[in-house]
Image (tube, rainbow, N blue to C red; front, side, top):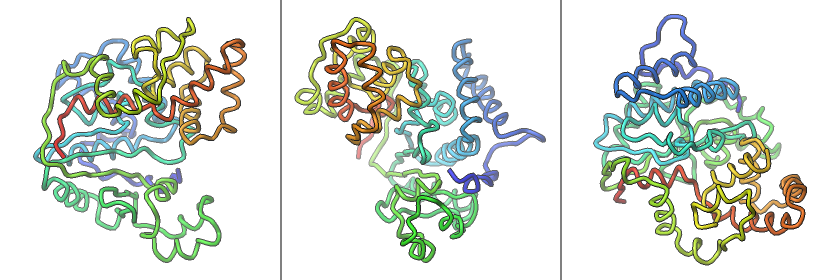
Length: 343
């Protein structure tokens, strides 16, 4: 991301103490919520928090996290709202923006939310009851100024935030902009698609209005219920396209609980990390490239698999190559079970 894009996101509705860095504010907010709601984070949970804080600092995400927190505080003024994106894979962010349900117990990998191999910032997905969208936008405009937001041309639900009024020079300088399009980009930013704006470093969020939202309880979310929700939402893919895999011993802990099938994106990342000793960041890269059917970009993964399982390596790689495109975000399914959303 172009660091200039988000460098001035300071005007947010929380109390900043003198001399505090953005990272220190995030940690303090977590401590305050821990005390307020009586969560009593365990030693393991604080280890996860500190790991994520290190990654957030390393990746330069501090102000993006605080902007997400701002959105959640602004959304508090709506009748009902819910978050359903991959923010659930960040323990820190999911705890900051929600007091109703913690996804932390499922140990979802932070790198599914963001990592060094991703060029665009993650999108925060917000569902609000009818009338809530206007309230959120009005509060955002009052907080930051209307000139800091733009809509992608391809969606009525997606908005993009900048830290300051749009500077066409930043757009023109960005290496991903093809030379033949520079004049058009400089002339009118509204011609950019959501994907193009994200690649340029603008932070994206979606606001979708629905009829009603009902908060459910932790009891609704178990490994079995997540699997059943997958079957309910993606039944054809589950039955017809993802075959049961003949288990290799080392894969049993990661596939047996989903009936020997690769179901979740995070599940694939965990296998890459625990079985093939691949970093979670690289595992997410492999996941995205397989989903795009770019076999040439995952040759190194095939080599790792072949080296570890020479006899079954080719079969296992082919299984991943066919199953990963049909895998879904476990964080999304958990969100589906945490809220009942009537569209």
